[in-house]
Image (cartoon, rainbow, N blue to C red; front, top):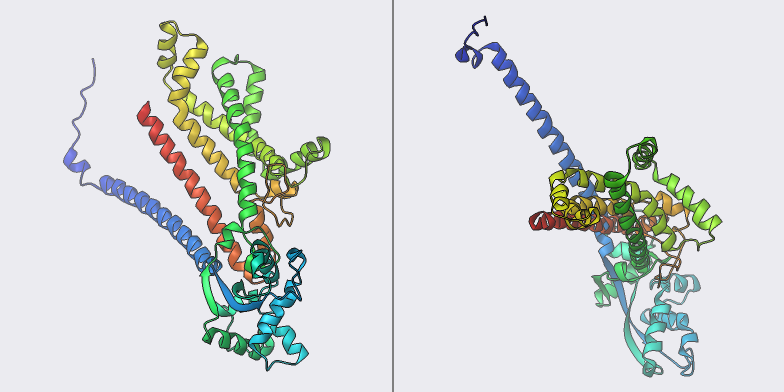
Length: 426
């Protein structure tokens, strides 16, 4: 004989102290969640805001327009590449201030155009040899202290002994500005130039190309190998101690610090195989080792999420196991696989430690033409600039971080788009 259940008093439950306690608990949990969300958004806004504030000056560059006398005294028509363009630049700036005759003052005056001006002028004359023997107006970047002055990053009220520019140097600059010879332009060189010791012409082209080659090598190796390993472990491998050991090690490898992969690459790829140091191909192989566990784990999770009935139905109507995997299970799992792959590649793009150990932090002033050429990568370029003493590199470091964040956001948006597209297809 069953005991008669007591009918609950809903009025008492909805108004009693127990109900009030439960309601307070729900409100507390909601408040904690909202607080955590606001803190995370606040930190993100603070990070991006501080990077933008410190990095935006790097997106413009100050230029000085001078009349350069391309005299045959300094530049021969037979071999303009070997011309004495430094003398041409010095004569042009000294001609603007004929009253400056003191040797020390002339030396300081000629430091106003960037030290790289002679090379920019040389390249222009070599490309346009008909200008030899004429006087041409040409814009060259100013050196870093004057660029900082024009961007109001140097306080004019600071005592002269604590300032990077003396008072007469500021007066020369102001005079040129009043004549309309100073201008600010968008700094396309930040993206199109390779690295340089002069911050006013230093750019990210070499690092961007190096990162692109390294990511391509990483993708071409880790994507097929990772998916193949995940398919075998999830669908074909027998369940025994050996496969259990492999699975445990793959999960552990995903948590290994990236610097360990750098040490492995240094020992195996450089010292054992003798591969070129600082080459993106070595960086890509290193990043592939680091990304493989992430792709394998993501692929296995995506395959597990596919209902077994899909594969069973395919084989039930005569499909082989291979046809069931590649025609039915893998397409259904593709959104999760692509999401995991892109997140793994995005993580690899931001890695610095393993690339430092294989020499991708070298000072390289040329854009690599192939994955075998020496190059840097975006995170190592940021590391190099952050360690440079010139103040101009401070804003360029923040700008480079913004560029890196832009790439990471773009890759994550691609992951979201691909996942949405494949989910609709399936």
